[in-house]
Image (cartoon, rainbow, N blue to C red):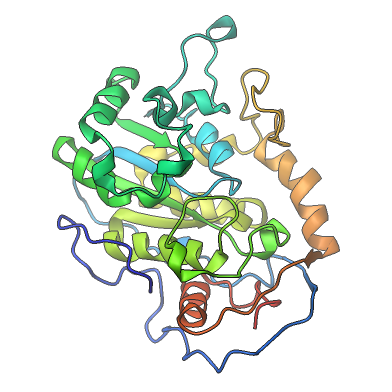
Length: 331
């Protein structure tokens, strides 16, 4: 596993995401090359065990106050955040200056990093945590959240590699938990390369290697144990009911979110035209966009076999997240 940082408040222990005896197998000797393209089809039958479904109901504990959705750009974080933000117990960082008072739940303007002036600084996304004023960020968030709601939710792609800093900043004020969105290489049609360059570290971009992305998601889940849960992008389409039921069991304040799957996640026109699911509910987006694409089979343009240490990282992440069958193009 890549070095992902340490958080003193969260003991390093193995969470119940894997069944007993389900350690990833030793990585075989890497193949020197692969075919230039590879076809990969995703189906509910081919998916491995969803980590969310292995999660037992958590015993009584301190109620959650802060819930951070962690994920990379274009992995469903925006739509998922917009959906959860409509829950009766939830407050998100809504933008008050919108048409007819509606919340811009699908625009970057709703993110705390944007409101703090940090979002448009990709050169700093991989900077040390000490480069940022976390007190300022906390004050910005608390000024915009509806503090009368029991659950305060936030999502922003740069936060994917800031779990430790978020926990240190907010845990003195209340219980912090994380929902980590993961995905397979196949889900993004090869747009996420696996040509790993370990010297680049764990960047938070939409182009860097899948193995490093998976390593960060797994690292968060392992470090925070029962205070983090993994939701796979594909399961939001292929196993919506069981996945959302497991999520609501893990975090009771999200109760009722599963009934929002057929509701449009937008309350007004999107500011960002690049989101093709602009005016669709999650159910319609799955039915009209993802499912036909996945069932027809995807052609990965860069199915690169990771070498050396990155080969071990890839195997570990794939096994932990249940993608050993989906990533058929990466041996």
